[in-house]
Length: 318
Length: 314
Image (cartoon, rainbow over all chains, first blue to last red; front, top):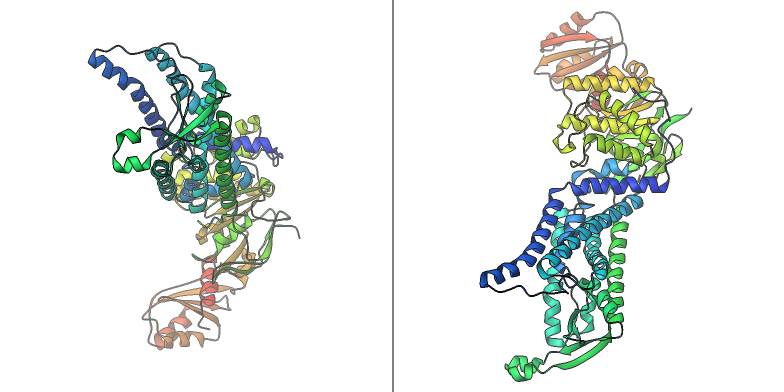
Protein backbone atom coordinates (compact mmCIF):
# COMPACT_ATOMS: atom_id res chain seq x y z
CA UNK A 1 0.00 0.00 0.00
CA UNK A 2 2.64 2.47 1.04
CA UNK A 3 5.64 3.76 -0.76
CA UNK A 4 9.12 3.06 0.38
CA UNK A 5 9.55 4.47 3.82
CA UNK A 6 10.99 7.95 4.03
CA UNK A 7 10.49 8.51 0.31
CA UNK A 8 7.92 11.25 0.95
CA UNK A 9 9.86 13.00 3.63
CA UNK A 10 12.13 15.69 2.39
CA UNK A 11 12.89 18.83 4.27
CA UNK A 12 10.50 21.28 2.67
CA UNK A 13 11.78 24.80 2.40
CA UNK A 14 10.02 27.75 3.98
CA UNK A 15 8.40 28.94 0.78
CA UNK A 16 6.97 25.51 -0.12
CA UNK A 17 5.22 25.24 3.24
CA UNK A 18 4.11 28.88 3.21
CA UNK A 19 2.62 28.58 -0.25
CA UNK A 20 0.79 25.39 0.81
CA UNK A 21 -0.90 27.39 3.58
CA UNK A 22 -1.83 30.18 1.16
CA UNK A 23 -3.30 27.58 -1.20
CA UNK A 24 -5.21 25.94 1.66
CA UNK A 25 -6.60 29.33 2.71
CA UNK A 26 -7.65 30.33 -0.77
CA UNK A 27 -9.23 26.97 -1.64
CA UNK A 28 -11.28 27.07 1.54
CA UNK A 29 -12.14 30.78 1.20
CA UNK A 30 -13.34 31.10 -2.36
CA UNK A 31 -15.95 28.34 -2.02
CA UNK A 32 -17.57 29.75 1.09
CA UNK A 33 -21.14 30.90 0.55
CA UNK A 34 -20.46 33.86 2.85
CA UNK A 35 -17.61 35.07 0.66
CA UNK A 36 -19.45 34.49 -2.61
CA UNK A 37 -22.56 36.23 -1.22
CA UNK A 38 -20.68 39.31 -0.05
CA UNK A 39 -18.76 39.69 -3.31
CA UNK A 40 -22.03 39.33 -5.23
CA UNK A 41 -23.66 41.95 -2.95
CA UNK A 42 -20.82 44.43 -3.59
CA UNK A 43 -21.16 43.97 -7.34
CA UNK A 44 -24.92 44.50 -7.09
CA UNK A 45 -24.36 47.71 -5.07
CA UNK A 46 -21.81 48.97 -7.61
CA UNK A 47 -24.21 48.18 -10.46
CA UNK A 48 -27.08 49.98 -8.75
CA UNK A 49 -24.92 53.06 -8.15
CA UNK A 50 -24.11 53.09 -11.85
CA UNK A 51 -27.49 52.21 -13.24
CA UNK A 52 -30.04 53.95 -10.99
CA UNK A 53 -29.14 57.56 -12.04
CA UNK A 54 -29.28 56.44 -15.65
CA UNK A 55 -32.69 54.87 -15.14
CA UNK A 56 -34.02 58.00 -13.38
CA UNK A 57 -32.73 60.25 -16.15
CA UNK A 58 -34.25 58.00 -18.78
CA UNK A 59 -37.55 58.01 -16.89
CA UNK A 60 -37.52 61.84 -16.83
CA UNK A 61 -36.54 61.99 -20.48
CA UNK A 62 -33.24 63.69 -19.64
CA UNK A 63 -29.95 62.92 -21.35
CA UNK A 64 -27.13 61.51 -19.27
CA UNK A 65 -24.44 64.16 -18.85
CA UNK A 66 -20.94 63.01 -19.72
CA UNK A 67 -18.69 62.73 -16.67
CA UNK A 68 -15.04 62.11 -17.48
CA UNK A 69 -14.07 61.78 -13.79
CA UNK A 70 -16.70 59.23 -12.82
CA UNK A 71 -14.45 56.15 -12.63
CA UNK A 72 -11.55 57.80 -10.80
CA UNK A 73 -13.87 59.24 -8.16
CA UNK A 74 -15.75 55.96 -7.66
CA UNK A 75 -14.01 55.13 -4.42
CA UNK A 76 -15.28 52.40 -2.12
CA UNK A 77 -16.99 53.41 1.08
CA UNK A 78 -16.08 52.28 4.58
CA UNK A 79 -19.07 49.94 4.58
CA UNK A 80 -17.91 48.22 1.40
CA UNK A 81 -14.43 47.80 2.93
CA UNK A 82 -15.98 46.24 6.01
CA UNK A 83 -18.08 43.91 3.86
CA UNK A 84 -15.05 42.79 1.86
CA UNK A 85 -13.09 42.25 5.08
CA UNK A 86 -15.84 40.14 6.63
CA UNK A 87 -16.17 38.07 3.45
CA UNK A 88 -12.43 37.48 3.26
CA UNK A 89 -11.23 37.13 6.81
CA UNK A 90 -14.00 36.38 9.24
CA UNK A 91 -13.65 32.60 8.97
CA UNK A 92 -9.90 32.49 8.65
CA UNK A 93 -9.03 32.00 12.31
CA UNK A 94 -12.11 31.89 14.53
CA UNK A 95 -13.85 29.36 12.34
CA UNK A 96 -10.79 27.07 12.34
CA UNK A 97 -11.05 26.90 16.13
CA UNK A 98 -14.84 26.60 16.16
CA UNK A 99 -14.97 23.79 13.63
CA UNK A 100 -11.93 21.94 14.96
CA UNK A 101 -10.12 22.09 11.60
CA UNK A 102 -7.26 23.84 13.39
CA UNK A 103 -6.17 20.52 14.96
CA UNK A 104 -5.07 18.67 11.81
CA UNK A 105 -3.63 21.93 10.44
CA UNK A 106 -1.34 22.78 13.37
CA UNK A 107 -0.10 19.18 13.57
CA UNK A 108 1.36 19.45 10.09
CA UNK A 109 5.02 20.51 9.74
CA UNK A 110 4.15 24.19 9.59
CA UNK A 111 4.65 26.63 12.43
CA UNK A 112 1.80 28.73 13.73
CA UNK A 113 3.58 31.87 12.57
CA UNK A 114 3.69 30.41 9.07
CA UNK A 115 0.01 29.46 9.23
CA UNK A 116 -0.82 32.99 10.36
CA UNK A 117 1.26 34.64 7.65
CA UNK A 118 -0.20 32.30 5.03
CA UNK A 119 -3.70 33.26 6.08
CA UNK A 120 -2.87 36.97 5.96
CA UNK A 121 -1.29 36.62 2.53
CA UNK A 122 -4.20 34.50 1.31
CA UNK A 123 -6.63 37.25 2.37
CA UNK A 124 -4.41 39.81 0.62
CA UNK A 125 -4.44 37.89 -2.68
CA UNK A 126 -8.21 37.46 -2.54
CA UNK A 127 -8.63 41.20 -1.94
CA UNK A 128 -6.26 42.11 -4.78
CA UNK A 129 -8.17 39.93 -7.25
CA UNK A 130 -11.58 41.06 -5.97
CA UNK A 131 -10.76 44.77 -6.20
CA UNK A 132 -9.10 44.48 -9.61
CA UNK A 133 -12.23 42.80 -10.95
CA UNK A 134 -14.54 45.29 -9.17
CA UNK A 135 -12.73 48.43 -10.36
CA UNK A 136 -12.24 46.93 -13.81
CA UNK A 137 -15.98 46.42 -13.98
CA UNK A 138 -16.64 49.97 -12.72
CA UNK A 139 -14.21 51.45 -15.26
CA UNK A 140 -15.79 49.67 -18.22
CA UNK A 141 -19.29 50.53 -17.03
CA UNK A 142 -18.28 54.19 -16.50
CA UNK A 143 -17.03 54.44 -20.08
CA UNK A 144 -20.26 52.90 -21.36
CA UNK A 145 -22.53 55.12 -19.26
CA UNK A 146 -20.61 58.38 -18.88
CA UNK A 147 -18.30 58.38 -21.90
CA UNK A 148 -14.48 58.50 -22.10
CA UNK A 149 -12.81 58.73 -18.67
CA UNK A 150 -9.89 60.86 -17.53
CA UNK A 151 -6.93 59.82 -15.39
CA UNK A 152 -7.51 56.08 -15.74
CA UNK A 153 -3.77 55.62 -15.28
CA UNK A 154 -4.41 56.30 -11.58
CA UNK A 155 -6.97 53.50 -11.16
CA UNK A 156 -4.28 51.17 -9.69
CA UNK A 157 -3.87 53.75 -6.88
CA UNK A 158 -7.59 53.44 -6.12
CA UNK A 159 -7.23 49.63 -6.07
CA UNK A 160 -4.20 49.77 -3.76
CA UNK A 161 -5.90 52.31 -1.50
CA UNK A 162 -9.02 50.15 -1.22
CA UNK A 163 -6.92 47.09 -0.36
CA UNK A 164 -5.08 48.98 2.41
CA UNK A 165 -8.34 50.48 3.74
CA UNK A 166 -9.95 47.03 3.78
CA UNK A 167 -6.91 45.50 5.45
CA UNK A 168 -7.51 47.62 8.55
CA UNK A 169 -10.75 45.70 9.03
CA UNK A 170 -9.17 42.40 7.94
CA UNK A 171 -6.47 42.74 10.59
CA UNK A 172 -9.06 43.75 13.20
CA UNK A 173 -11.09 40.62 12.33
CA UNK A 174 -7.94 38.50 12.64
CA UNK A 175 -7.19 40.01 16.05
CA UNK A 176 -10.69 39.60 17.48
CA UNK A 177 -10.98 36.14 15.90
CA UNK A 178 -7.69 34.99 17.44
CA UNK A 179 -8.61 36.32 20.86
CA UNK A 180 -12.24 35.19 20.98
CA UNK A 181 -12.11 32.13 18.69
CA UNK A 182 -15.75 32.94 18.02
CA UNK A 183 -16.97 34.02 14.58
CA UNK A 184 -20.19 35.70 15.71
CA UNK A 185 -18.40 37.73 18.36
CA UNK A 186 -15.76 38.71 15.79
CA UNK A 187 -18.37 40.06 13.37
CA UNK A 188 -20.31 41.85 16.12
CA UNK A 189 -17.19 43.59 17.47
CA UNK A 190 -16.18 44.71 13.95
CA UNK A 191 -19.66 46.08 13.17
CA UNK A 192 -19.93 47.86 16.53
CA UNK A 193 -16.55 49.52 15.98
CA UNK A 194 -17.48 50.47 12.44
CA UNK A 195 -20.76 52.03 13.56
CA UNK A 196 -19.03 53.81 16.45
CA UNK A 197 -16.53 55.43 14.08
CA UNK A 198 -19.18 56.05 11.42
CA UNK A 199 -21.53 58.00 13.70
CA UNK A 200 -19.16 59.69 16.12
CA UNK A 201 -16.68 61.13 13.62
CA UNK A 202 -19.21 63.40 11.78
CA UNK A 203 -20.59 64.56 15.12
CA UNK A 204 -17.15 65.53 16.33
CA UNK A 205 -16.56 67.30 13.03
CA UNK A 206 -19.87 69.13 13.25
CA UNK A 207 -19.30 70.62 16.67
CA UNK A 208 -15.58 70.92 17.04
CA UNK A 209 -14.71 71.64 13.46
CA UNK A 210 -12.87 69.31 11.08
CA UNK A 211 -10.31 68.36 13.67
CA UNK A 212 -7.36 66.39 12.39
CA UNK A 213 -8.06 64.05 15.32
CA UNK A 214 -10.70 62.45 13.10
CA UNK A 215 -7.97 61.24 10.78
CA UNK A 216 -6.57 58.99 13.47
CA UNK A 217 -9.69 56.77 13.56
CA UNK A 218 -10.56 54.36 10.75
CA UNK A 219 -13.06 56.10 8.52
CA UNK A 220 -13.52 59.09 6.26
CA UNK A 221 -11.62 61.47 8.56
CA UNK A 222 -11.82 65.26 8.35
CA UNK A 223 -13.63 66.70 5.31
CA UNK A 224 -11.91 69.39 3.28
CA UNK A 225 -11.71 70.81 -0.21
CA UNK A 226 -8.96 71.32 -2.76
CA UNK A 227 -9.74 74.80 -4.05
CA UNK A 228 -8.66 74.24 -7.66
CA UNK A 229 -11.09 74.49 -10.56
CA UNK A 230 -14.56 73.50 -9.37
CA UNK A 231 -13.09 72.27 -6.12
CA UNK A 232 -12.49 68.63 -5.12
CA UNK A 233 -13.91 67.18 -1.93
CA UNK A 234 -11.43 65.39 0.25
CA UNK A 235 -11.89 62.93 3.08
CA UNK A 236 -8.53 62.82 4.80
CA UNK A 237 -9.08 59.54 6.67
CA UNK A 238 -8.12 55.93 6.05
CA UNK A 239 -11.16 55.21 3.87
CA UNK A 240 -9.79 57.52 1.19
CA UNK A 241 -6.20 56.44 0.79
CA UNK A 242 -6.58 55.77 -2.95
CA UNK A 243 -8.32 59.09 -3.57
CA UNK A 244 -5.75 60.95 -1.46
CA UNK A 245 -2.90 59.47 -3.51
CA UNK A 246 -4.69 60.43 -6.74
CA UNK A 247 -5.30 63.97 -5.41
CA UNK A 248 -1.61 64.29 -4.65
CA UNK A 249 -0.75 63.03 -8.13
CA UNK A 250 -3.17 65.48 -9.76
CA UNK A 251 -2.49 68.46 -7.47
CA UNK A 252 0.99 67.95 -6.00
CA UNK A 253 1.44 71.53 -4.84
CA UNK A 254 -2.16 72.24 -3.78
CA UNK A 255 -3.49 72.47 -0.26
CA UNK A 256 -6.55 70.91 1.28
CA UNK A 257 -8.63 73.54 3.04
CA UNK A 258 -10.80 72.58 5.98
CA UNK A 259 -13.76 74.81 6.85
CA UNK A 260 -15.11 75.15 10.33
CA UNK A 261 -18.84 74.92 10.86
CA UNK A 262 -20.31 77.96 12.55
CA UNK A 263 -21.89 76.09 15.43
CA UNK A 264 -23.45 79.23 16.94
CA UNK A 265 -25.30 79.88 13.70
CA UNK A 266 -26.18 76.20 13.48
CA UNK A 267 -27.77 76.27 16.92
CA UNK A 268 -29.59 79.58 16.33
CA UNK A 269 -30.83 78.59 12.88
CA UNK A 270 -29.25 81.63 11.26
CA UNK A 271 -28.84 80.37 7.70
CA UNK A 272 -26.93 83.38 6.46
CA UNK A 273 -24.32 83.01 9.15
CA UNK A 274 -24.23 79.25 8.69
CA UNK A 275 -23.14 79.38 5.08
CA UNK A 276 -20.25 81.67 5.94
CA UNK A 277 -17.21 79.46 5.55
CA UNK A 278 -14.55 79.96 8.18
CA UNK A 279 -11.23 78.47 7.26
CA UNK A 280 -10.09 76.21 10.03
CA UNK A 281 -6.70 75.12 8.68
CA UNK A 282 -4.99 73.93 5.52
CA UNK A 283 -2.46 71.22 4.74
CA UNK A 284 -0.74 69.98 1.58
CA UNK A 285 -2.17 67.07 -0.39
CA UNK A 286 1.13 65.21 0.13
CA UNK A 287 0.64 65.28 3.91
CA UNK A 288 -2.97 64.13 3.60
CA UNK A 289 -1.98 61.17 1.43
CA UNK A 290 1.04 60.20 3.51
CA UNK A 291 -0.75 60.51 6.84
CA UNK A 292 -3.69 58.32 5.75
CA UNK A 293 -1.23 55.63 4.60
CA UNK A 294 0.83 55.76 7.80
CA UNK A 295 -2.22 55.65 10.07
CA UNK A 296 -3.68 52.71 8.15
CA UNK A 297 -0.33 50.90 8.30
CA UNK A 298 -0.11 51.50 12.04
CA UNK A 299 -3.58 50.04 12.63
CA UNK A 300 -2.80 47.05 10.42
CA UNK A 301 0.51 46.41 12.19
CA UNK A 302 -0.95 46.65 15.70
CA UNK A 303 -3.99 44.48 14.94
CA UNK A 304 -1.89 41.85 13.13
CA UNK A 305 0.61 41.77 15.98
CA UNK A 306 -2.18 41.15 18.50
CA UNK A 307 -3.69 38.50 16.22
CA UNK A 308 -0.36 36.72 15.70
CA UNK A 309 0.48 36.69 19.41
CA UNK A 310 -2.96 35.36 20.39
CA UNK A 311 -2.86 32.72 17.63
CA UNK A 312 0.63 31.55 18.53
CA UNK A 313 -0.13 31.31 22.25
CA UNK A 314 -3.49 29.58 21.99
CA UNK A 315 -3.74 26.07 23.42
CA UNK A 316 -6.04 23.74 21.56
CA UNK A 317 -8.24 21.99 24.09
CA UNK A 318 -11.08 20.79 21.84
CA UNK B 1 16.36 0.77 24.28
CA UNK B 2 15.36 3.05 21.44
CA UNK B 3 11.79 4.19 21.96
CA UNK B 4 9.39 5.83 19.53
CA UNK B 5 7.69 7.60 22.43
CA UNK B 6 9.20 8.21 25.84
CA UNK B 7 7.69 10.38 28.55
CA UNK B 8 9.28 11.19 31.87
CA UNK B 9 6.92 12.08 34.73
CA UNK B 10 4.63 13.76 32.23
CA UNK B 11 2.04 15.86 34.03
CA UNK B 12 -0.70 18.14 32.74
CA UNK B 13 -2.93 20.18 34.99
CA UNK B 14 -5.97 22.18 33.96
CA UNK B 15 -6.44 24.40 37.00
CA UNK B 16 -6.95 22.06 39.93
CA UNK B 17 -7.66 19.08 37.67
CA UNK B 18 -4.75 16.75 36.97
CA UNK B 19 -5.46 15.26 33.56
CA UNK B 20 -2.10 13.44 33.25
CA UNK B 21 -0.21 12.48 36.37
CA UNK B 22 3.52 11.64 36.27
CA UNK B 23 3.12 9.40 33.27
CA UNK B 24 6.17 7.36 32.27
CA UNK B 25 5.13 6.00 28.92
CA UNK B 26 7.49 3.99 26.75
CA UNK B 27 6.52 2.87 23.28
CA UNK B 28 8.96 0.56 21.52
CA UNK B 29 9.68 1.10 17.87
CA UNK B 30 8.02 -1.14 15.29
CA UNK B 31 5.17 -2.14 17.57
CA UNK B 32 1.44 -1.52 17.64
CA UNK B 33 0.90 -0.01 21.05
CA UNK B 34 -2.62 0.29 22.41
CA UNK B 35 -3.47 3.13 24.78
CA UNK B 36 -6.46 2.22 26.89
CA UNK B 37 -8.46 3.97 29.52
CA UNK B 38 -12.02 4.90 30.38
CA UNK B 39 -13.49 8.22 29.22
CA UNK B 40 -11.65 11.11 30.86
CA UNK B 41 -8.64 8.96 31.75
CA UNK B 42 -6.24 11.38 30.07
CA UNK B 43 -5.60 9.57 26.78
CA UNK B 44 -6.40 12.43 24.43
CA UNK B 45 -4.59 14.96 26.63
CA UNK B 46 -1.49 12.75 26.56
CA UNK B 47 -1.71 12.44 22.79
CA UNK B 48 -2.12 16.20 22.37
CA UNK B 49 1.07 16.70 24.34
CA UNK B 50 2.85 14.09 22.19
CA UNK B 51 1.97 15.96 18.99
CA UNK B 52 2.75 19.40 20.42
CA UNK B 53 -0.79 20.71 20.72
CA UNK B 54 -0.57 21.15 24.48
CA UNK B 55 2.30 22.16 26.70
CA UNK B 56 2.92 19.85 29.64
CA UNK B 57 2.77 21.30 33.14
CA UNK B 58 5.74 19.18 34.19
CA UNK B 59 7.88 16.36 32.85
CA UNK B 60 9.28 15.82 29.39
CA UNK B 61 8.35 14.08 26.17
CA UNK B 62 10.54 12.55 23.52
CA UNK B 63 9.11 11.41 20.22
CA UNK B 64 11.43 9.57 17.84
CA UNK B 65 14.34 10.67 20.01
CA UNK B 66 13.51 14.38 19.85
CA UNK B 67 12.17 16.53 22.67
CA UNK B 68 8.65 17.68 21.82
CA UNK B 69 7.88 21.37 22.02
CA UNK B 70 4.68 23.19 21.17
CA UNK B 71 4.87 24.61 17.65
CA UNK B 72 7.99 22.67 16.63
CA UNK B 73 7.13 22.21 12.96
CA UNK B 74 10.11 20.12 11.90
CA UNK B 75 9.52 17.43 14.54
CA UNK B 76 6.18 16.70 12.89
CA UNK B 77 7.76 15.73 9.57
CA UNK B 78 8.23 12.16 10.81
CA UNK B 79 4.88 11.77 12.56
CA UNK B 80 1.39 11.09 11.30
CA UNK B 81 -1.51 12.01 13.56
CA UNK B 82 -5.21 11.47 13.36
CA UNK B 83 -7.18 13.34 16.04
CA UNK B 84 -10.26 11.92 17.69
CA UNK B 85 -13.26 12.72 15.47
CA UNK B 86 -11.13 14.66 12.98
CA UNK B 87 -12.64 17.64 11.23
CA UNK B 88 -11.42 19.09 7.97
CA UNK B 89 -12.45 22.16 5.94
CA UNK B 90 -15.78 21.19 4.42
CA UNK B 91 -15.20 23.34 1.33
CA UNK B 92 -12.24 21.24 0.26
CA UNK B 93 -12.50 18.01 -1.71
CA UNK B 94 -10.96 14.89 -0.20
CA UNK B 95 -8.18 14.70 -2.77
CA UNK B 96 -7.54 18.44 -2.49
CA UNK B 97 -7.12 18.15 1.26
CA UNK B 98 -4.51 15.42 0.88
CA UNK B 99 -2.80 17.39 -1.87
CA UNK B 100 -2.52 20.58 0.17
CA UNK B 101 -1.36 18.67 3.26
CA UNK B 102 1.17 16.85 1.06
CA UNK B 103 2.55 20.21 -0.01
CA UNK B 104 2.99 21.14 3.66
CA UNK B 105 5.11 18.01 4.05
CA UNK B 106 7.17 19.09 1.06
CA UNK B 107 6.03 16.20 -1.13
CA UNK B 108 6.76 16.72 -4.80
CA UNK B 109 3.99 16.70 -7.38
CA UNK B 110 5.05 13.21 -8.47
CA UNK B 111 5.03 11.91 -4.91
CA UNK B 112 1.58 13.32 -4.31
CA UNK B 113 0.30 11.93 -7.61
CA UNK B 114 1.53 8.45 -6.62
CA UNK B 115 0.71 8.44 -2.92
CA UNK B 116 -2.72 10.10 -2.76
CA UNK B 117 -4.65 7.68 -5.03
CA UNK B 118 -3.11 4.72 -3.16
CA UNK B 119 -4.15 6.12 0.20
CA UNK B 120 -7.64 6.98 -1.03
CA UNK B 121 -8.06 3.42 -2.24
CA UNK B 122 -6.63 1.88 0.92
CA UNK B 123 -9.03 3.78 3.18
CA UNK B 124 -12.01 2.95 0.97
CA UNK B 125 -12.73 6.40 -0.45
CA UNK B 126 -12.12 5.62 -4.10
CA UNK B 127 -14.78 7.31 -6.22
CA UNK B 128 -15.54 9.89 -3.52
CA UNK B 129 -12.20 11.70 -3.48
CA UNK B 130 -13.53 14.57 -5.59
CA UNK B 131 -16.54 15.19 -3.35
CA UNK B 132 -16.47 18.09 -0.93
CA UNK B 133 -15.61 16.95 2.60
CA UNK B 134 -18.78 18.70 3.77
CA UNK B 135 -20.69 15.94 1.97
CA UNK B 136 -18.73 13.15 3.68
CA UNK B 137 -20.36 11.01 6.34
CA UNK B 138 -18.75 10.74 9.77
CA UNK B 139 -17.17 7.45 8.76
CA UNK B 140 -15.78 8.93 5.55
CA UNK B 141 -14.26 11.83 7.50
CA UNK B 142 -12.66 9.24 9.75
CA UNK B 143 -11.22 7.51 6.68
CA UNK B 144 -9.80 10.70 5.19
CA UNK B 145 -8.39 11.36 8.67
CA UNK B 146 -6.50 8.08 8.56
CA UNK B 147 -5.32 8.80 5.02
CA UNK B 148 -3.87 12.20 5.96
CA UNK B 149 -2.08 10.62 8.94
CA UNK B 150 -0.28 8.25 6.56
CA UNK B 151 0.41 10.80 3.83
CA UNK B 152 4.06 11.44 4.65
CA UNK B 153 4.97 7.76 5.21
CA UNK B 154 5.62 8.56 8.87
CA UNK B 155 7.89 6.62 11.20
CA UNK B 156 5.27 6.92 13.90
CA UNK B 157 1.51 7.08 13.49
CA UNK B 158 -0.61 8.30 16.38
CA UNK B 159 -4.27 7.42 15.99
CA UNK B 160 -6.76 8.74 18.54
CA UNK B 161 -9.80 6.46 18.55
CA UNK B 162 -9.51 5.53 14.85
CA UNK B 163 -12.65 3.39 14.80
CA UNK B 164 -15.12 5.92 16.19
CA UNK B 165 -17.94 6.46 13.74
CA UNK B 166 -17.13 3.49 11.56
CA UNK B 167 -19.49 0.62 10.86
CA UNK B 168 -18.32 -2.94 11.68
CA UNK B 169 -16.90 -3.44 8.19
CA UNK B 170 -15.09 -0.11 8.42
CA UNK B 171 -13.70 -1.03 11.82
CA UNK B 172 -12.37 -4.29 10.45
CA UNK B 173 -10.80 -2.44 7.51
CA UNK B 174 -9.09 -0.03 9.91
CA UNK B 175 -7.66 -2.94 11.88
CA UNK B 176 -6.32 -4.48 8.69
CA UNK B 177 -4.88 -1.11 7.66
CA UNK B 178 -3.12 -0.72 10.99
CA UNK B 179 -1.64 -4.22 10.67
CA UNK B 180 -0.48 -3.42 7.15
CA UNK B 181 1.29 -0.21 8.07
CA UNK B 182 2.88 -1.92 11.06
CA UNK B 183 4.27 -4.63 8.78
CA UNK B 184 6.02 -1.85 6.86
CA UNK B 185 8.00 -0.94 9.95
CA UNK B 186 5.88 1.98 11.11
CA UNK B 187 5.25 2.29 14.84
CA UNK B 188 1.56 2.68 15.61
CA UNK B 189 0.32 4.22 18.84
CA UNK B 190 -3.45 4.07 19.04
CA UNK B 191 -5.89 5.01 21.71
CA UNK B 192 -9.12 3.13 21.83
CA UNK B 193 -11.98 2.31 24.12
CA UNK B 194 -12.68 -0.82 22.06
CA UNK B 195 -10.92 -3.54 24.02
CA UNK B 196 -11.42 -6.22 21.39
CA UNK B 197 -9.83 -3.93 18.81
CA UNK B 198 -6.73 -3.43 20.91
CA UNK B 199 -6.61 -7.12 21.75
CA UNK B 200 -6.76 -8.08 18.08
CA UNK B 201 -4.09 -5.77 16.71
CA UNK B 202 -1.82 -4.53 19.49
CA UNK B 203 1.22 -6.30 20.80
CA UNK B 204 1.84 -3.80 23.58
CA UNK B 205 -0.70 -2.07 25.75
CA UNK B 206 -0.75 0.77 28.26
CA UNK B 207 -3.74 1.23 30.54
CA UNK B 208 -4.30 4.56 32.26
CA UNK B 209 -6.95 5.89 34.58
CA UNK B 210 -7.24 9.33 36.19
CA UNK B 211 -4.11 10.33 34.29
CA UNK B 212 -1.95 7.65 35.94
CA UNK B 213 -0.52 4.54 34.38
CA UNK B 214 -2.00 1.30 35.69
CA UNK B 215 -0.15 -1.14 33.46
CA UNK B 216 2.16 -1.07 30.47
CA UNK B 217 3.70 -4.11 28.88
CA UNK B 218 3.24 -6.68 26.16
CA UNK B 219 -0.26 -8.07 26.08
CA UNK B 220 0.81 -11.57 27.36
CA UNK B 221 2.76 -10.02 30.24
CA UNK B 222 -0.17 -7.83 31.25
CA UNK B 223 -2.40 -10.92 31.09
CA UNK B 224 0.00 -12.86 33.32
CA UNK B 225 -0.42 -10.22 36.01
CA UNK B 226 -3.96 -11.54 36.38
CA UNK B 227 -3.24 -15.24 36.84
CA UNK B 228 -4.03 -18.20 34.68
CA UNK B 229 -7.78 -17.83 34.44
CA UNK B 230 -10.84 -15.88 35.39
CA UNK B 231 -14.39 -16.85 36.22
CA UNK B 232 -17.28 -14.55 35.43
CA UNK B 233 -20.27 -15.20 37.68
CA UNK B 234 -23.51 -13.34 37.21
CA UNK B 235 -25.41 -13.47 40.48
CA UNK B 236 -28.91 -12.19 41.30
CA UNK B 237 -28.76 -9.79 44.28
CA UNK B 238 -25.00 -10.13 44.72
CA UNK B 239 -24.39 -9.69 48.47
CA UNK B 240 -21.31 -9.17 50.60
CA UNK B 241 -21.86 -12.60 52.12
CA UNK B 242 -21.64 -14.25 48.71
CA UNK B 243 -18.43 -12.34 47.88
CA UNK B 244 -16.95 -13.34 51.23
CA UNK B 245 -17.84 -17.01 50.61
CA UNK B 246 -16.13 -16.95 47.20
CA UNK B 247 -13.07 -15.18 48.57
CA UNK B 248 -12.66 -17.90 51.20
CA UNK B 249 -12.16 -20.57 48.58
CA UNK B 250 -8.53 -21.71 48.66
CA UNK B 251 -7.89 -21.35 44.91
CA UNK B 252 -9.29 -17.80 44.68
CA UNK B 253 -6.63 -15.11 44.52
CA UNK B 254 -8.86 -12.11 43.87
CA UNK B 255 -12.40 -10.90 43.23
CA UNK B 256 -13.76 -7.77 41.55
CA UNK B 257 -17.35 -6.71 41.39
CA UNK B 258 -18.95 -4.89 38.47
CA UNK B 259 -22.71 -4.61 38.98
CA UNK B 260 -24.13 -8.06 39.56
CA UNK B 261 -21.12 -9.74 38.01
CA UNK B 262 -18.33 -11.08 40.13
CA UNK B 263 -14.96 -11.48 38.45
CA UNK B 264 -13.00 -14.19 40.20
CA UNK B 265 -9.28 -14.70 39.65
CA UNK B 266 -8.20 -18.26 40.32
CA UNK B 267 -4.73 -19.72 40.64
CA UNK B 268 -5.52 -23.12 39.16
CA UNK B 269 -6.13 -24.50 35.72
CA UNK B 270 -8.68 -27.05 37.05
CA UNK B 271 -12.37 -26.65 36.39
CA UNK B 272 -13.54 -25.37 39.74
CA UNK B 273 -16.95 -24.08 38.66
CA UNK B 274 -18.76 -26.68 40.84
CA UNK B 275 -16.86 -25.52 43.96
CA UNK B 276 -17.65 -21.88 43.23
CA UNK B 277 -21.31 -22.70 42.60
CA UNK B 278 -21.50 -24.49 45.93
CA UNK B 279 -19.98 -21.53 47.78
CA UNK B 280 -22.35 -19.01 46.12
CA UNK B 281 -25.54 -20.99 46.74
CA UNK B 282 -24.35 -21.81 50.28
CA UNK B 283 -24.16 -18.07 51.01
CA UNK B 284 -27.66 -17.51 49.63
CA UNK B 285 -26.74 -16.35 46.14
CA UNK B 286 -28.53 -17.35 42.96
CA UNK B 287 -26.26 -17.90 39.96
CA UNK B 288 -27.70 -16.56 36.72
CA UNK B 289 -24.68 -17.44 34.62
CA UNK B 290 -21.09 -18.55 34.97
CA UNK B 291 -18.13 -18.99 32.62
CA UNK B 292 -14.47 -19.76 33.10
CA UNK B 293 -11.87 -18.55 30.66
CA UNK B 294 -8.33 -17.35 30.42
CA UNK B 295 -7.95 -13.66 31.23
CA UNK B 296 -8.55 -11.36 28.28
CA UNK B 297 -7.93 -7.67 27.92
CA UNK B 298 -11.41 -6.82 29.10
CA UNK B 299 -10.80 -8.70 32.37
CA UNK B 300 -7.49 -6.97 32.83
CA UNK B 301 -8.96 -3.60 32.04
CA UNK B 302 -11.90 -4.03 34.43
CA UNK B 303 -9.65 -5.33 37.16
CA UNK B 304 -7.14 -2.52 36.89
CA UNK B 305 -9.67 0.28 36.54
CA UNK B 306 -11.97 -0.93 39.32
CA UNK B 307 -8.96 -1.44 41.56
CA UNK B 308 -7.89 2.13 40.80
CA UNK B 309 -11.38 3.40 41.59
CA UNK B 310 -11.34 1.56 44.94
CA UNK B 311 -13.67 -1.19 43.68
CA UNK B 312 -11.36 -4.01 44.68
CA UNK B 313 -12.93 -6.41 47.09
CA UNK B 314 -9.84 -8.36 47.95
